[in-house]
Length: 266
Image 1: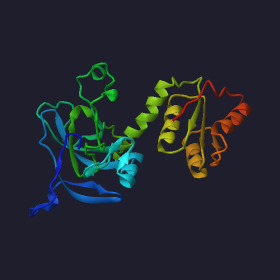
Image 2 (image 1 turned 180 degrees about the horizontal axis):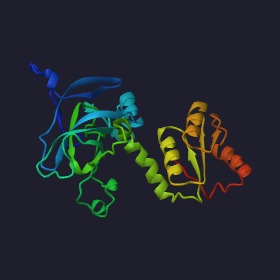
Image 3 (image 1 turned 90 degrees about the horizontal axis):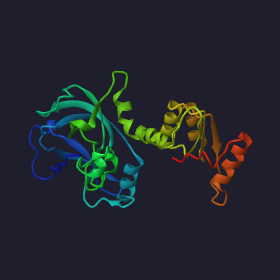
Image 4 (image 1 turned 135 degrees about the horizontal axis):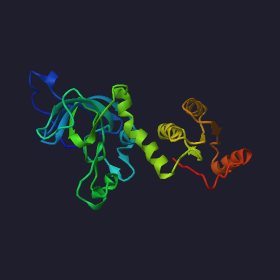
């Protein structure tokens, strides 16, 4: 978990095992085990959350299949999962913004709150970030976790816990639209109709983009993208000799769209 924790495997389990906190531990390639997970004490600025929904990210799949993702390598058993939401069960003595029973989405990255990036409001760039399910930090696919209250965001009544768990991937699309200055006069190209491509479509539509075009190699994904708000979908070849950019440029010339000046890559 974000605040740390340890496996309590081994030894004799107590009779009240049904009350013990359990988690999904990645213990080897394609091997997950449900094992006890001991949580730290709830600090004055922490909350304990009963996890109710966890998304499966591509990084989780990489760790499961290869025990690594980019430069991060799983060296010892690790609890996976970082896209999550749940219900507050206990609050620390200094917590004023949350009470037991609140439904919350969790920010999975714990920054140091002291470096220049954090003090400048760019805590996502903290060099000492501790991120759920990024070795050696444990994740959130567990019955309960302990997390800083400031990184737990109360959900509106009309947002489900499952939707709350999707706030983290959705934030990727929102961040991309902000960086690209998407607005009513912007045409958008999204490359790839996977989960992040789809939330980028949703975000671009919410930002008022004039036209959204998405490209992918899979018809089913493209169909889903259109149902979520893409104006046009372009299927590109899986042949490595065929340039995706050449295919899309031809399409945009038909639309009289300035491809080079409006590329939005997600």
